Image 1 (spheres, one colour):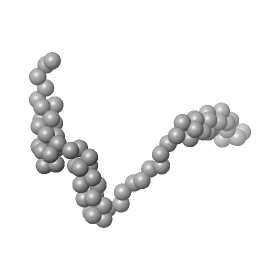
Image 2: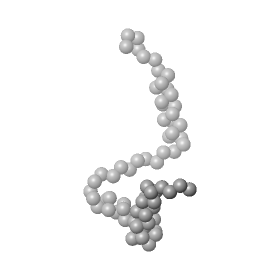
Image 3: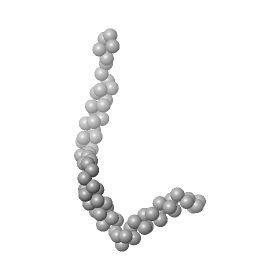
Image 4: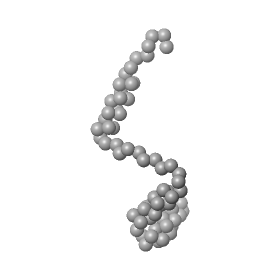
Length: 73
């Protein structure tokens, strides 16, 4: 595998961050979430998409694409 200095830098940063949490990714993520909440900035809470909602969106898009323009526009 070729030498990639960018990836090596990313891996080193990841190792440094995780070392503060004894390699526990869950603890790191939880601490990051708590810091974000404490910041007071708004945090998006997107809805969980399901296969059914994705199919409904696709059918709405298809229906919109098949509509014809009114005459004269």
